[in-house]
Length: 639
View 1: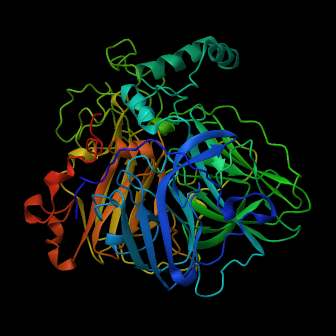
View 2 (view 1 turned 90 degrees about the vertical axis):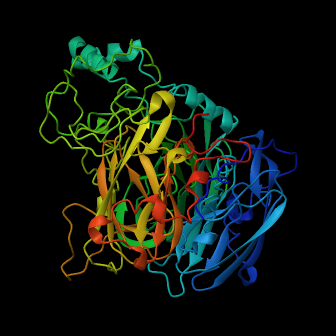
């Protein structure tokens, strides 16, 4: 069922009622004690409006069972689940099980895998638990996730834990805004960088001139101006609009977890934010990663790591007889979430100050390793040209750029070795393409480039178990992550979700490689529902035992100007959402649908690309895909 009529719904005003934090999210000795198993794996959720309190300030929220975050669901691998969800809202709702391998009808994406949960109705989710690990769940309707409909999910393994521990804490990171998300989205649509309050000032120019010389400082600004970019425009929505939370607690409320000195403590860290990527550290306390995205990995010890939106990392720490501060800072250094780990209630550690804001680089512009770029061609647009304001994350092309397949590089007035040929449409939704995208899997991420301690990168991850499918990929699909910040358009290959006429076709059991090229200047957490993919790490083939241990992921944070590849073997038939997990990017159009079809429907291999013509699949309601319902226009349309 590939129908977007039910994908977006409006958000109603909140009602007044009292909200309490769930037991697992409370501070102190009671904190994280709500880990009891759900009786008989049959339980009930109620979605409703509830007022909550963040750092002493009241606000309306969309909640599950009256709490923010939603209840912790604790289950056992191999068992069957029955969940009854009552929607008390006057709008459609849904729950998606992020990272779970469930039948596609249970995946919880309105208009793709099911119609949604109608207002004042009840829906039953039924599925077997085929895996263990740390996951989470959230609404896939309108902006309900931003408004509070998200919660943690832990599935205990059928056998012993691969990495034993004495105590655990579930750490749910999120971002909360006291503004109406629809209003924020409308502001972004008017001007893509309208919420960037970290722009460079005259004082920054003076400081740069002192360090690098006046000529160099002026040339640097002229270059960014010619390309209509801002090196400080890293996050669309940041600490000026957000309060960053740990388990529903703001920085002033300070969530606290109590441990016994010398214990081995497992932290199940979940980034359940709508738009935030965090750099996570615990000053003075090393972390050892043991599980990523619910799958066991070989232990790697480090001091700080970056967690993309929708990712989960399980780390083990061994705290001593003192208090520690857990810090999750937004990658643009505009704010941070704080928590305390301590052996005694009332003891805390000093929170470190925010770091200086990071700046984007030539590599973020997709110009890695290209010499002589400081004097960009004068034919590039200048900020004085019409329509330049708000162009924050990408190079620009006029809207009348020819819309045929672009085969001749960027045409910036020069050619350069290493340029990548691009094969996707140009037009108003594609401001530019990366000139020289490269793998950045060995980099820790924005804001961590110069920290004086150990960091974690994707290239360090190895699965704890050998990969089960060693077949070479039979074919490759290349997708470009594209944008036009002036009009706040986000898309795949320049096609927003409201304009999609054909899903991406995969075939059950085939081995396929997908290559992602980020033509924008923002990192994008790209999530594929219904399956895990193996992250291809350049230079790594196999271990000494002849086995391969590529990490399995359900979400990959693609850095600006990066090109990376993943390989997958689709395990389940059905239609699966594929999208950027930055909520406002998804709503602006960076979404597609992957249809996994039976092998006997596969055309001859030389004809397999993005799938057979739409006419060969009359059961897909492609016309309905481009229309919204329930009070909003279609996904990715101009609003």
